[in-house]
Length: 289
Image (cartoon, rainbow, N blue to C red):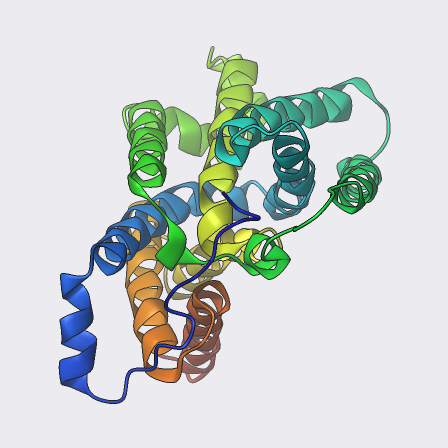
């Protein structure tokens, strides 16, 4: 599915508002908008904890390693989506286990496994015979290509993340701020840590098709980082992160349609520009507390 998608709207360019509105009649555009909202909310929710727990490099490693899952799916003639989900989940848990069981710094372990996984992914990709499809779609994504299955999977991950994080928000915040204190308070630190890694890995997997292997980390980190510039109050920070997540995703789709650009990079570009604008705004002393 990832490597064989033939985008039938590649030559579509939007030149006025009426044309853009007419696109809403197409099912692929409706799915893209729904996917943007769901993935934006999911990215904002998990990204809040990713930035505070300094896991951005972790999600970066999982995202790049996903190339192995995609290549394996194609080689084994198996739906890459269903190969990608268990692969990223197992990869994320194993990497966290390595970090816990070695004396090496976490960034060193992540660099090692990232390099190894990326090398394996490139080699497996080279073994694919015949037509390899649109590799650019795997690297940079195409949210216009998502289908109903992708939407259902994203919704399930979002519901799972909400059920896991929101009822235990106070414990999750304490764990984020000081894991030693959380341990003393009787909070199951390891359970929460591994549970969050499972969610993060699955979120990366479902977002790959929309924004691609190379940009999926930005989808998680930039909206949350933008929100963090504006507020240090956790509840407000979390809400703003979610808002930035889905609004920039929708804006990215619009930009993609207007200028006939790739959807994944367009979304991330909008997120980056908003981050720069907020950064400059905060530097002028207008920060929200």
